[in-house]
Amino acid sequence: MARNVGTADHVAAPSRLAAEPVNQLTAMAATAINPQIGGAHMLGTRTIAANCAAAPNLQILTRALTASDAGRALSTAGPVTVFAPSDEAFGRMSPHAVNALLSPVNRATLNKLVNYHVVRGAITLDQLRARIDQGGGTAHLTTVEGASLVARKEGAAVALTDANGNKSYVETPDVQQSDGVFHVINGVMIPRLA
Image 1 (cartoon, rainbow, N blue to C red):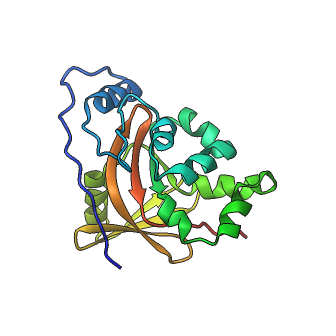
Image 2: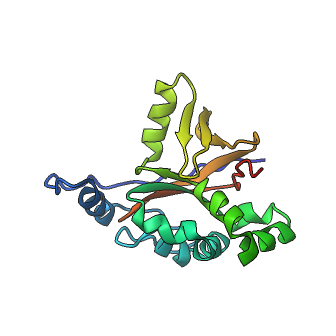
């Protein structure tokens, strides 16, 4: 399987930023040159949920964010990093599994799954690579769900390994918003559900 690792150019943030981290993040996001996702412009002044909704290839994630309590809480969690599975990533799951996850009776499981893709703090790809280097080749990221993801470099790619040993790769990094940053990934990370 070919691994596509996108890149994004960014404009330096203004030198005079507000002291509060959220105001600083908002100012940086407003000046960022974000990559297009699925041909849609990602505006730094939008929230993560709004930019995901605007991307034609993040519609299943958007449905998951809308259907879950976790998605509604995303904007109040402070700056976060979301590892955003593409529709193609969800397409690797069985259609029955995706539909079951989105069913109201499975909201607790959906909350766990969505929260497993969210890490507190806005972490760019360069910062993630630095954490991997500082960790001797691995970085353990504690998700909002409470479980850990393991990040490693594989050549130029960054791989994330979930609790079940499944790998996902960052395809398009550093989409910066007013409430954090997201990275499009090519797999759905599944926490231990039992």
